[in-house]
Image (cartoon, rainbow, N blue to C red):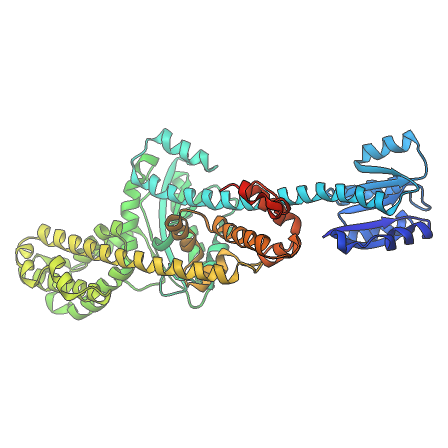
Length: 541
């Protein structure tokens, strides 16, 4: 409803206006009254009306002074003056203040109501445009953030020239020019999977954004299930300190959540943006150690190299084959991605030390990988016949153990294929998740406070991941889909019920009837009233 405040020194006139109109019937709320500007001003600040209806001549503080103060404090307020004096100077000052209307006394209730309804239409339009603009900007910001996060993979791919990368950065207001670069890859999860919904994950993401806000020497990118990527920029002499500082910041932030697990890997410093791929490879190898080392640490590229070189104490007898089979490989199959396979296999093979040069040892390793993959794919629900057809039986391993290169290739291929099977299952799972999300929206679209976070929580998917898969699979953003559901429901109610437009807006999730009407027209090209009056054939499909 549009809120009205009345300032009038004549009590009879004030009472006549207050009691002469059925305010609620016409979509107004009478928010208060005062006999002069001095008493009215603090009441206006408290009630925040949409319209100030004021006399000009009043004791203590006149209407013009009151209007100036009110307009300064509440820029969106609309002023309607009424006065018994047809004075050009008054009118000129009123226009300067920004008066929306100027009425001469005596004013009948019908005249006043007509003027107020005209003003209400203007206010409705302004509020609706503001609300629609906010929704539009929200959608644009979501899309922009997704494009920005994808920029990380573009940067580390090494496929674009420096001018192209700098242009891409400028599109997102990011300065990518620096004397030296390095990377941190990082994952923190409060749930079993980064894709699952977790209050801790949501809060961590928010706090991380707050921590990085305004910083020019680090850019953070959300890589969804692969965690976060951070591009660090600075002088050569200061790069080591910066990497250590931001590593500590990430650790401190993650450890502020008692149930959260984390792991990170740092790259090697490079002096050209076109060489960042080299840093990414080093960071990826360190990051891949999360499947083999204890969690809750950030491993530097240098430390990862030292681990690889420290093979003197490794022997065949010292290798726990059971642990390798039941822990490391299944963990990677469950959480790893295809781009990570290369780095994971390198880490896995090098962790075996010189023993990998033994034919017998390679047979052990490849058999464990094979059994882990067969067990994992079978647990996904695929039939044994299909599994054997795709992965073969144990006899297929024999040619692959003859050399280190063939063993590495086999391991990469079988892990990549297994992750492909997992992706197929995930797509089926996402279809079920989206069906569940659609059902949830259908049951709760009437709630004004329904949000992407609420739906993501209901289907147990992280908000970022849910937003991505919803847009990709539905080919429409969450906000656009929710609006469509609400508008379709509104059309049904307009055609089949006698409910007032404001009541229909409320029933489909909009407490502000003006915003509902504006949005309906914006989407369908016709107002709710016109639609109900037989204009449904004119609706934009």
